[in-house]
Image 1 (tube, rainbow, N blue to C red):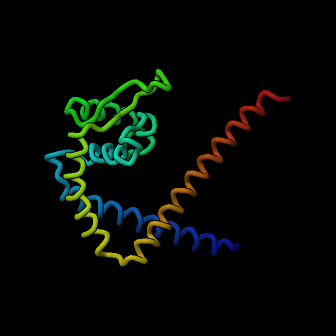
Image 2: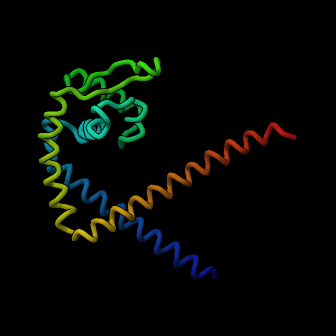
Image 3: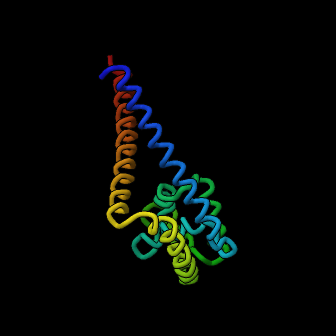
Length: 171
C-alpha cells in the first residue's frame, strides 16, 4: 500500500471515529437532559441495569465493575449508596470469601422499571426514530464488531506480555 493510500485510510478512520464519538456525545447529552435524575442518576441506573441482566438479579461486584461505564472505586461507592437507599443488598460471595455479591431488592427493581420506561422512550426518540430497522441492526453489528476487535487486541497484548515475562527468565 502506498504512503498516499495509508494516509487516506487513516483519514477515513479518524473521520469515522470522530463521527461515532460526536454522535455518542450528542445522543448522551440529549438522553441526560431528559433522564429523571431527580429520582436516580445515570450511573446508578447503569448499575441497576447491569444487575437486572444477571441471573436472579444478582451479580458479583467484580463482574459489575467490568460491565459499567465508571471506574472501580466509583462503583464501590455508588453500590454503597444504593444499598443505603435500600435499592440493592451486598453480601459476601459464598464461593469466594473475598468477593461481594450485589443483589437488587424489590424496591430497587420497581424504581429501575419505572425509570427504564421513561429512558427507553427517550432512546427511541433520539435513536430509533433517526434510523430504520435495518440501519439499527447494522449499527448493532458495527458497534459489536468494534468492541470485539478492541477486546481481542487487548487480550493479545496480555498474552504477549505474559509470554515476554515468561521468556525473560529463560536463557
